[in-house]
Amino acid sequence: MSSATPFAGTPRVRRLPLAGVLRLGRPSDIWFKPALSVVVAVAPPNLILLALGRLDLAMYTMAGSLCALYAHHRPYTARARALAGVVLGMVAGLGVGLVAASLTGSAVALVTVGALVAAVQKALCDATRIGPPGHVVLTFISSASLFAPQTPAQVPGHLALALAAGTWAWLVGMAPGLFRPHGPERRATAHALNAAAAYAENRRPHTCGTAHAAVQAAWQTLLSAGARSETRRALERLVVRAEVALASPADADPHRLRAWARELRGTGPVPRTAYDDELLGVEAELAAPARRWWRALGPLAPIAMRTALGCALAGYASLALGIGRPYWALVTAASLYQANVTLTWSRGVQRVVGNLVGVLVFAAVVPLAHLGPAALVLCCLAFNFGAEALMGRNYWLGSICVTPMALLITEFAGYQEPGRLITERVVDTLVGALVGFVAAMAVTNRRAGDRVEHALAAVERARARAARLLAEPHPAPGSLDSARRALAAALVDLRAGVEAASGEWWQRALPQERVVHAEQAGHRTLAATIRHHRAEGARP
Image 1 (cartoon, rainbow, N blue to C red):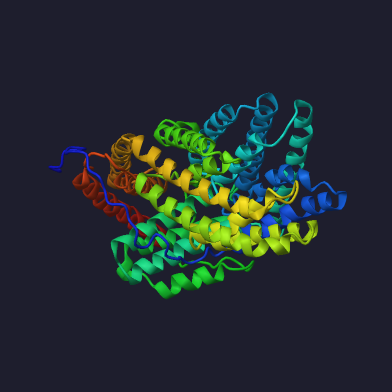
Image 2: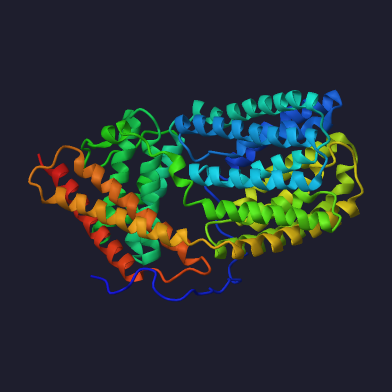
């Protein structure tokens, strides 16, 4: 038994990192898909408005078009639902902003509404795990709409424009499924195979965690893909091969794993494996009630509180300084909040650096954009593409394109003096980042430690169930497969919970010994279930 006392000790302040915050990473293997999708989603509405001489309405169509940024890693069945939810959420946030703008001219009241909406958007996006770009785009649109001159009679028409553009964005996001219907599942499986190969070659703790997370992501993708076609069954068997490599890395063949991953590119047949046995338990998991996303809202309450407080204070500070666009400070604060204070600090540094460089890019480009409305639209499209192409490398790099794009969008209703725009953007960025981070430190998140305790209990329960099934001479068909996946998911959740809690300030000491023991015992049990599955598959 561990001698560590859970959460014993005195509160500690952790160092905030600087090294590596701006380091560039490798781009996503599908970086071009969201980049191209957003251009295809934005271009037709903007060009139509350009032809009609109504670019002043572009903010409303942009709200719907930007929904094309979401859900590119999800299977198309799940993507259809996710994109529909994003479109409805975007229109709802826009509607709240427009109605508030039409009912009151009080800037303080509008900032308050914007902060509350941002907190709701943050909580919902985190609870549903909608993924990048998360709540930031939703908050940008809803906050900007709060300060758009509006009358109640105009609101329905403007929402209709956003909904129409959102419907087009939904079609853009679903269109690749016509040509590569299993693309997301194939990519997730290939990523799991490559991660397992990396662990087989270099058996280090960080590669082990990465590999298990990749395998778990592949299972989540396959289980959310709908009906089990023969292609998906073949992909499931490949994921099991990745699990086998994690269980016995010394016996794994990294070259074979990578060869399978390469064969999954394109639309060719899925490679067959040596043990082409039927996987049991998947149908039962698909039939089981899905985990309700709203159960995750409780642990997210501190993050939502940080968002509401930080956005409100940032907006009020901007108003006190006499800035005409307090929503820029509000959005800057909203963009900071991550899983813990340490990550929030890193995002703040990235946001400030990216925005400051971005205003310099805007200053260089604005003479070209002012050549005419067509040049303005084309510049915005170019920055849309650049933002998504670069964001995966590091947030600050993508922000270099996001900043001039946001500044140019303000000119759809008419050209403005560049010097004033640049000054206001710089001030609001600094105010939003500073005030937003102070709010993150002020609102403690003791629930991060509770999450670790709950995750430990879940791992122990899942491990006990798997061990019990292993001890049975003839476990029910599919039960051990299901228990293995449940244990793997619990281990990934535990590691994520520990990493999130480790980056929090004012957090009591975590039960490190219990965590290490639970992870070691869990991975040993996982390996035993995989060896059992392999042995069963090898029998005649």
